Amino acid sequence: MELVRTVAALGARADAARAAGRRVALVPTMGALHKGHLALVAEARRRAELVIVSIFVNPTQFAPNEDLASYPRDLDGDVAKCRAAGVDVVFAPAPAELYPEGAQTWVEVGELAKPLCGASRPHFFRGVATVVAKLFAAARPHVAVFGEKDYQQLQVVKRLARDLLLGVEVVGVPTAREPDGLARSSRNVYLDAAMRGEALALVRALDAAEALARTGERSPAALLETAHKELLRAPHADVDYVELRDAETLAAVAALDRPAVLALAVRFPAPRAASGAVRLIDNRVLRPGSQEDPR
Ligand code: AMP
Image (cartoon, rainbow, N blue to C red; front, side, top):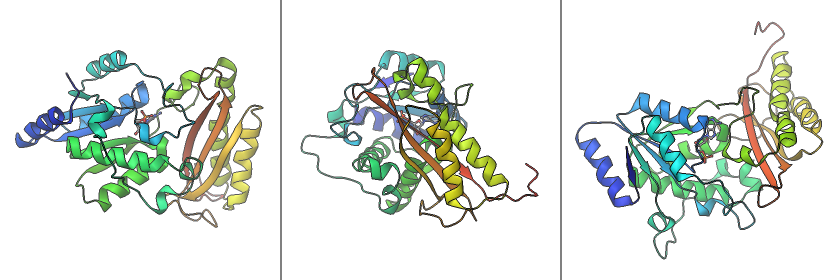
């Protein structure tokens, strides 16, 4: 396995693989790798002969009051995990590699980037879309693998790859969870034992709404109320959003008559995080059920 620090070296490696007729896969991450990231690597391995993992804590997707400085970083540990997982290239650039002096070009995705995390973190998707476009330009992959845990991000990246004619196939991988159901996240390390327990409210909220949908309930208000009630059973949960949106367009839905994503974002107090709180997200795609639904 190779650790590559520059865009030039990465491009040379990817071009050589392409010229030899090998497929190239890219797995973009911000490091502090966990089993969720490794599930993406496994999917990349199934789809390509050269697997590149990028590790870059992208400054432009953090607002000044967010956790850029304290975001967990462990390059040595990440490199060891990538080696063990059979990754071919780890790309870990310095910020100036991806944002050359005087950089002033941005990628902005439209409607998909506005609701949910786009509403509570207005700078976020511009930063994500811009860095993903740069990583695609640098690695020139055939396929790029992203997690469904960041559902809106996956839709935004699929859209930008199509809109900018990048010729990259964007593949989603189901959310990897801890044994008790909590979605794996680099930010889970900020949670103490009590808040770690309360964070399970996110999974209970998704489960409860899904169970209600299976009985045939189609009213967004009823489904959202059920989810909200579960979240409020966690005394320290500070709900950022609970929304039901069309699974493809992320537009608001009047009824659950086709697949819709129930998306949650909740803050918990976390003295270990610089901001004093950790914001967790999770989601589930709900499908219209009926009373006869045998599931
Ligand atoms: P991050 O390092 O958190 O920016 O995430 C890098 C990639 O890993 C993104 O595509 C995420 O959606 C994905 N990812 C993070 N956590 C999980 C998880 N629990 N299951 C599946 N994918 C994940």
